[in-house]
Image (cartoon, rainbow, N blue to C red; front, side, top):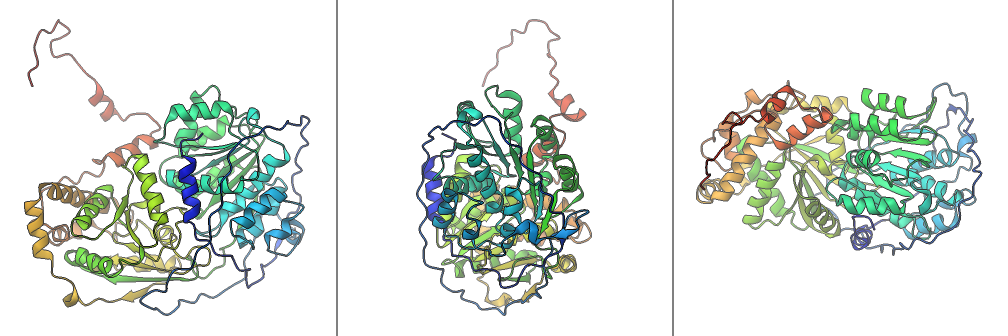
Length: 592
């Protein structure tokens, strides 16, 4: 079995409260595209049948969440016709998409009854736009470059054709791995694996997951037995490709790269290049990315065949965020930030809330502090052990009312059921990161709210959000109505050694993260009033801390990853060890 236990996956399925999706009200625009689909080569050898026992029960549909306490006017967006583009394309879209019906039942004949039955039991009846425009071309064997914002339903868009490819080729464990899905984070890999498990419940194909932080020996044993559909993070996948002799990947039929922009952002560019070099060239490739950057274009050029089908469902939208999302910002001075957060969370204890911070230490401190003062919260951040991250993720998914403090490790791709509020306590690095953070709510046609905390000197960030087509309303708060707990907070920091140490680490990491912002004109660490910032962490006087940007473990790890294992001269010098005795026998005794 893969590292993630069946019980955990079964638990995740029970947590998802999916609603049946309504067909799109507007008809998709049809532009001219090339209809010459690459024909799948007939396989000379038919692979026999072999049982793989891995069936799971489907999640139950539950009642919708109760309405929000506050009602805000809907931010209506102008709807325009959507396009699908392809370089050098000149023929009609209908010839690629075929039937205009957007129900999954219209795929009968193209998709097996086993897969359609699983989709129906998962609660889906109608395809979302990215699914409607992607599934049929992928079933024909096309390479595809997809651009769709978070929450658009792209996971099923690539999983349905992947499962069908294995089914039509009668893939067995002894044939090795036929499908590889690469995800940027462990949490997204877990979530994708959960959907894979549901989709394969009536099939006999083996499936598994490999990711950093998991037991590598167990993964090796599983790979040697044969995993037909594999979900992986880039670093661990490259490790197994290079070092696991029993890993049969030579029969790979399709490579799927999910959240490609995020994979590159967190420093896996070199790993991805190595992976693509190792994998068989004769394969179908699918690349999905929420944003198009130069790096993603370079990756697409290397991994995809010439003239891939381009599917973009958001190209002409007037807003970059989903409909049904109510967004606002609040201007709050540094010394009042925690007081405002405390008041907000205390008022919304009956809601499902995610609060984003810029550093692991800041998450850790605020989690310890809030739990200490009787505001129960969960936390997820990069330095946690994988078992802790996984259990917290499932617990938050299961809860109908809960508060989760997290870093951007949870900002991409995760489909967490019915999140009511997204709070960005620390500002994002850029508008793209803002869009991905708020994408955790208002998913798949649901509604949600988002609130951004800004300092008075950070208001120019709104101009960048406006350029990125992000509509925001200003929310106001009455400072006089905030609970005056500043004195008690400072007294607590003085008396409690562990909270004081945690607050000091959080304060230092906040300043380091602020200094590393890419938008220096907006987020200038030299303009911060450290006295006020320190008050937000419970200090009456700012503690003396180092502001070295790369002093944190996470930053050093990222720098090493970008170097692809090659140490800098500085680190190499530090690792050199010379004997203090000049190589002579050392008879000194060490006393503790």
